[in-house]
Amino acid sequence: MAQSAYIYLVDGSAASTLTLDELKDHLGRYQEQTGLTGRQLGWDYAASAFPYSIETKPEGQGKWFYLKGSNPLYKYILFGVGTQTEEEKEKTYIQVTLPDDSTHGDKSKGNELCKYLARHLKAELRLFNGRTMYFNPRK
Image (cartoon, rainbow, N blue to C red; front, side, top):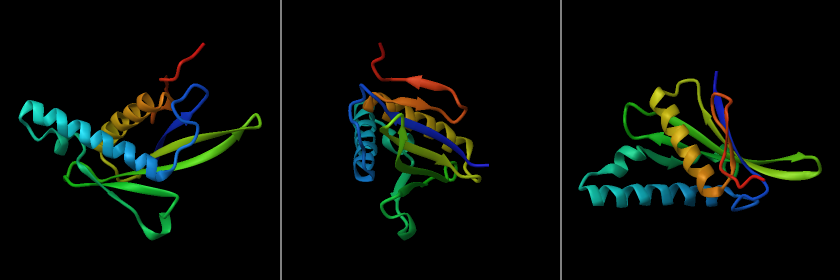
């Protein structure tokens, strides 16, 4: 059975809405940062930290995209953006889904990417195992 993690943009988050292109930009920033870290270490860290290529399919155009693994230890991670109405407020979320044939490497990279995005967006993160992490300022 597929597993999903959710990143909710709540009050106090860095952004109130997010598009797929902006999400791709955040993932691109992650690749860039790991590349800079690798240069400082003298090692190709970017290839290990982000062993995926960003792919889209015609049926998912504007709804979702996926990361395709460039290494046999990684297969796929799906990313989508949506909204839900809660108490007359519209809440934007990012859904990160691991398909049935995903590997343990996909799950660990999915957790890592979710934490990065949630920390960067100051959002609320509901992990694959159901636990919640808060990166937004709470009162």
